Length: 313
Image 1 (spheres, rainbow, N blue to C red):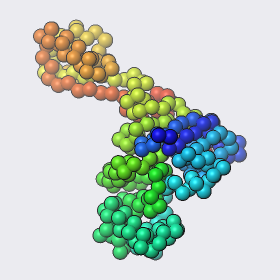
Image 2: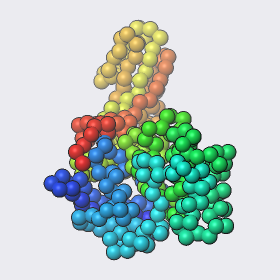
Image 3: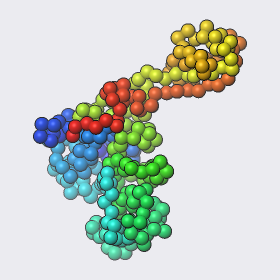
């Protein structure tokens, strides 16, 4: 199956400010691809180019098999876009907003009504269908916004920081909605500065900083790029702790917590080896926990800062 999105050497500058410096990536059909980076790193610019809102300065970009520069109408017919800020009309009801999008997609009244009802049910907004979005919670507005982007039945959806400003419960509800879209065969291109969001949702993640990709891969692959993984052992008393120190010479000791941090890859083989060594030395361990680097550790190690930093756009 051809890729949903294909990008090579994409470049964009605003005046003297180089925002995208020749990035390359491919998004397989039916997957979630996350572009992760600090504010101003070029995430929104990438979405705007791929959704034909602005032109690139160089490189090649194909969406749904169509060149975004040479055939923008075909690209627009294949995609849906949900931006950072809600695009709903507060003077219309939830159902009327969806009906309006149906008419803009040149759907008949009957088909617009059918799709509006289906999407209201899918995003759990049926009870609020006759209310205006001004009365909705933040999470409900974002779900309606996402539903509006799906009225045209797109196979590729761009979500530009879709959960910005939402509380944790609303954010998780949005995640469920995004997963349901992918289960239906939709490809999702997601930009976010929330590390947990990329970790939870994405099949593939690219870290963008300074106009370039600093790393790309699955969440697991990215976490393996940096050190910091360890297995924490906690003991019942100081005597057992001292005995364990004699076994694990390179471990870091926390005497106050009666614990050791044993560096390692945190895989099954490492766990088995540690437990075997403890058994051989007749040392009882009170508690064992595995700690792996998270995406924040990865981004910090590769760029020297975290994703909350503002970058000049």
